[in-house]
Length: 289
Image 1 (cartoon, rainbow, N blue to C red):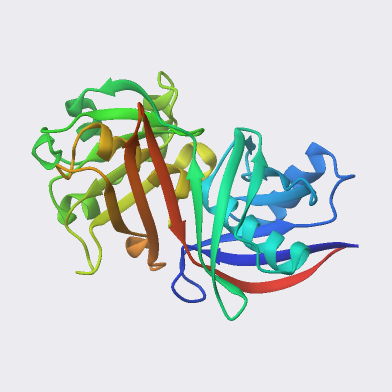
Image 2 (cartoon, helix red, strand yellow):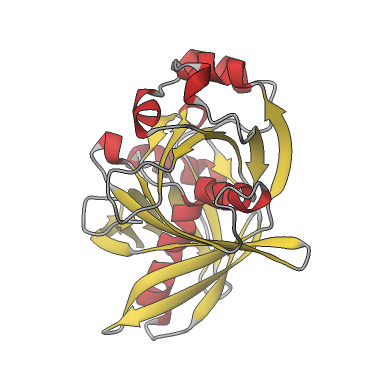
């Protein structure tokens, strides 16, 4: 009997944030089995806890296995703490194909209130011509903040980071699926994050959209891995003019799934230290037949 759980990650209340299915008791499942279950779930990602004692996890999208993803890391850590450890612990090390991701918890009445993950140091890749990116996003070059580069960044899963000048430009951004697939064919990054300082909520410091057609999902409502790349980008390029960076990041508003991600990043010695956090809210549980 295999248990599964559905949670909302980076959510302030249920049915917000990014959905995740987490499957326990799956050490005998094949890769093909895991991919088929993920397609049946039809969530942006499904995680499989293959070794609860070692906190070893595999992450799948409906199209493929991926080495790292942010909201699956936080959501799976929540399930491990609540359903496997069943006691308050300060943190755990989640083992994913990309490496070991340290996760820490703060609690309210025995339930994690905020969960934070330390991401791998960012790797900065190629810059992208702003004119080419503007055409892909169906916006004007003037909508891109040319004070900062359009650049590939990876903390395990690479994204192209695009700074925009306004919330209106962020709302109007919309790559056409086949055009995106053709564009990213020459890049390591297959997905695009656009961001701006203008926000829907005055409490927040950044508005973000993430386009992920390459993974079979047109847009993600909340993306920890992408925002980790953004956190490194902000420090590297002095976007806020100071270090460390602490920000509340809103995402998913255009999809009617408003999400809140918490970001901390700073230069420590010669590396950029990145922490992404948020809340995880349980939605459902069941048994796979």
